[in-house]
Length: 124
Image (cartoon, rainbow, N blue to C red; front, side):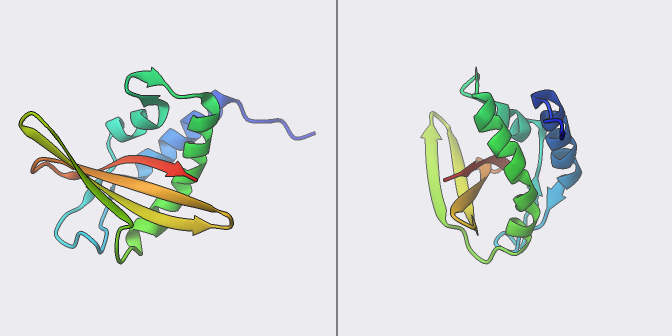
């Protein structure tokens, strides 16, 4: 019988994988690198300071394996938006990858003139 992995094990494996990504160069941003920081991984676990459902977290963790290929081979983004709050502007780009019958969106964010960084991943 195959033993199911615990949530803690899945999370730890995802965290190691995520940390090993480190920095990527995406052709869509030829003069900037995308950084994979702690805040991005925390966003997979929390949303607006609230714990995401475990099933949602696991789905996001399992989707991490598609980040490298998607961003390294991207020629365009599928969505773009700006959010302004007081004196700060956040810019968001979504990159899409189709896998069988689902679509994964990798969200990259930039705050004002700061570096590009991984923000989130979601699937439909």
